[in-house]
Structures are given as structure tokens and as C-alpha cells.
Length: 106
Picture 1 (cartoon, rainbow, N blue to C red):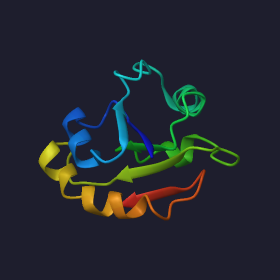
Picture 2: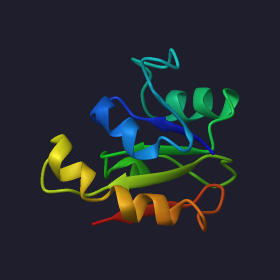
Picture 3: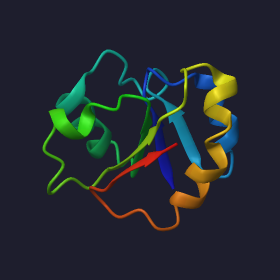
Picture 4: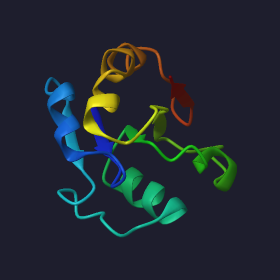
């Protein structure tokens, strides 16, 4: 599965998704893009999942008709230690997430 880590996610979290093609926004040359532009560029680059900590995306973007799915990591902080605790649940979610779906992980 091709996964994009949003800029707000510590790039070291990539290791948790080692069995997938997981790239940071910077590596994928998508750094600096925001909201709809980021989602469109990610879809154009064939990313299937975007992992973010931005809990506002579903309210700011119309996700209907999108091919990319979004996993929102809702940890107490954006520190790697807190985000890593959600990685097992994120990995389990990959097997059932549908295109355009948003899943919040707590």
C-alpha cells in the first residue's frame, strides 16, 4: 500500500509502516502543499492513504469522490513516542479502509 506521511507527522514514524511504500511529504516532493492541493497531488502520485494529525481535514475538505483515504492520529501530542502508540491500530486499519474514508485513531 502506498502511504503518505503528512508534514505534521514525525518522519521517523515511517519505520512503523516498513512493509508498505511509506513516504514523507518532503520525500514525495509534496512538502508545502496544503489541504485540497495536497490531497489532489497525493492522488496524482497514486498514494492510497495519507496519515496526518490534522483533525480538521474532514471539516475543511469535501472528501466525496476522493480515491485517497485518511488516517488521523489523535494522540495527546505530535511527539513520536505518542504517535508510535497508535501505529498498531493504524496498521490494522489499512486492511479495511475504503477510498475516501477517514478514520480517527485514538
